[in-house]
Each structure stands twice: as structure tokens, then as C-alpha cells.
Length: 131
Length: 202
Image (tube, rainbow over all chains, first blue to last red):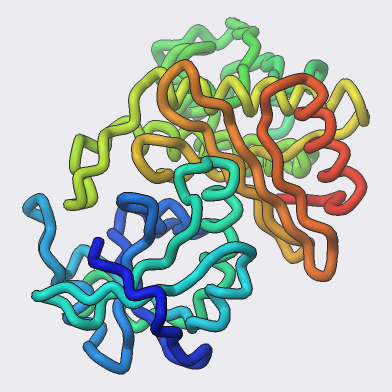
């Protein structure tokens, strides 16, 4: 998580990249891949990075970058989900970073958010296995 | 081949099976034998009949032409079982992001919840609730999902004993539902939503 800048609002048409590990990607869904960390879901601004950079963000294990897919959602489609905001949260190593957040520690709310985020995905920028 | 296997569906969530060997049955099985069992949906067939017989049964199941509707249920049950097994094989940090594995207790809680909902749906509406897909959820939780052109429903079973399942469902243009499954009344509300707004989930 980065330091959120609540004063900056992103254009609703801006696309965001979210990384999802292949184990979450099944024929009938992938919403388990929308994982909150410290109350927010990490994404990257498409205006400031490439999908392959999102896929290659630091990991805790041995999974290679190719084990991840990258989905695309727009800021506007995310903020149509009740309560959600997209907040710039640039990191030293990742200036494109944003937080998608609200009270994602509320599990009932998180279930709704994950379902609607899955519906909000407009396309896959990368699928697992892509070079 | 249809006379080789007789399947009678009586109770929600279970399938009684009467099995008689056919010429393709392994020679280890006496030709005059009859196997009778009850298959509880979501459990391996091997819990009911000999593993070899189960494999033989499944191999020839599609040939039971007068059991098409039930065959769909059986195929759904096989998928359901495979998905739960897949979850159990994932180790800690399977996603490279520190996620925990899926505990046997959590997976069992999810399958038990499906069993309860299936029975309750049958008891209330005299109709079958199709088995959901079982998917990896975040932080060791299990996702159960139903999807069709009529809409989608996501039911999340959290890890541990204290967690309460939560559900979110939506239909095109319809009123969504969001609730905790913490009581029989909540289960009934969810099942009524399925029946009223989304009569044919798959």
C-alpha cells in the first residue's frame, strides 16, 4: 500500500491494471484474485505503466511473472461500485500505484465488491503464460 | 447399456445407485452381483462403490440415454468434487502473494453449506438447486459461485470456525441481494431470491 493522496481524482475513463494469479482464474470466475491488502486492492494506472510492469511487481514466492494475468477496469466502472474510491498511492518503486478502497475488511461488503469488480473487467491485457 | 445402471433420485443431495455388471465390467466382478449404494453429492463415488466399479460406472454413464437430466447432475457433481479436491492441493503462498492454503475444515464447511442449501431448496420449493462452482477465494476462504445468463451469485465461506458466509447476487436489471448467511432465515431469504429472480441457475 502506498500513501494515498485523497485530493487527486483520476479521470473516470482511465484504465487500471490489476494482477491476478493463475490459480484464481477458473472457467466460472476469478473474483478470488481481488485481494485486499491493508484495506485496499492494489492497481496500476495504465497511463503510467505497461501491463507487463504490473505483472512483474514484487512477489513473495517463486511464482514467475508469467503465472499472472492482468485485467483492465476503468476508474469510472470501479467507482460505480457503492463506496469504492480509486485513490492515487504512488510508491517509490511504482509511481503508477493506486488503491481501490473502502471498508474492505467487512466481509459482506468485500464479497459484493469482488463480484462487481469481476463484472467490471473490460478485457484481459495479459493472460497467464503470455510472454 | 441403459439396463445396466438404474439410478433413482429420491432425496435431495443423494443419488441411490443400483449397479449390475455388464460385459465390459472387469472380470473381477461376478456377473451375477448387484451393487447398491447411496451417493452423496460432493463426495467421491469411491466412498460408495468399489473404485474400479466407480470408474467403470462413470466411463459408461453417458450411455445411459434415459437419464439425461440426471447425467447433467452427475457431471456437475464430478466437477464439484474435482474443484474441492483442487482447492485442497494448493499449498501456502500458492499465489506468490502470501495467501494461506485452503484448510480441510474450510473446504468441508463449504461443501456442508452446499448440502444444507440444496436440501433446504428441495424441501421448500420441490426443485433442485444446481451445484455451484468451487473457486479459491481470498485469504483461505472458499468461493461458491452460480452463473448463468440470468445472473450470478457469489457465496464466500471464510476460513475458521467463527466466520459467517456472505453472499452477493445480481441479475440484469434486477435488485441485487447482499447478506450474511448466519441463520435459517437468511438461508431462506437467499433461496427465495434464487427462486423468484433467478429460477434457473447453472
